[in-house]
Image (cartoon, rainbow, N blue to C red; front, side, top):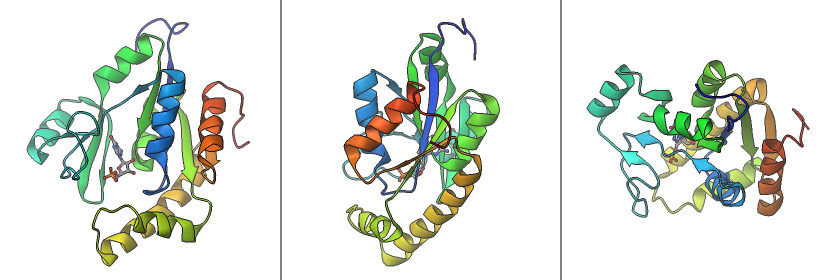
Length: 195
Ligand code: 5GP
């Protein structure tokens, strides 16, 4: 990343199991802090309510691989059999302009970001309890079958274990408003590691 370090913004990674409420938390943090929310590129199919360019940029595997080969992504990973990546130029621009940049990405991606930008803050959102995660996944209305829900639940447990080793902060989403405040406190430097 280039630019004047004094003026540089902050890179914040937010990860967590699917269904834990990360998107809602990210949206509220973005509003409250006028942060820049990175729009990821993915090869997965759009969901019914998703808008290309707002939720994700949906592209083909060929295009993704070509762009990855040209080094256009800050990080990328294969999640549940699809590629997801963070385009680098908008992130660099926002950081140089002194903005807070939020990346809502998985743990594999978070670890890549930490390697490239050690000053990045990695935040992991935890569900209040396991049963709750199961319930939230059931309520997502994606029309997923039992097997795919199970796969997501297992992946969630693996992700939590990996995050425990490498992430800087953990926020339990038992109450939305306080989870949002916790993330803001971390961004503002009011919460130390592992508080
Ligand atoms: P979903 O398909 O449910 O929208 O996302 C599946 C997973 O991919 C989530 O954990 C989400 O945070 C993660 N993800 C979304 N965009 C990116 C990205 O650009 N890079 C990485 N590594 N993971 C991403």
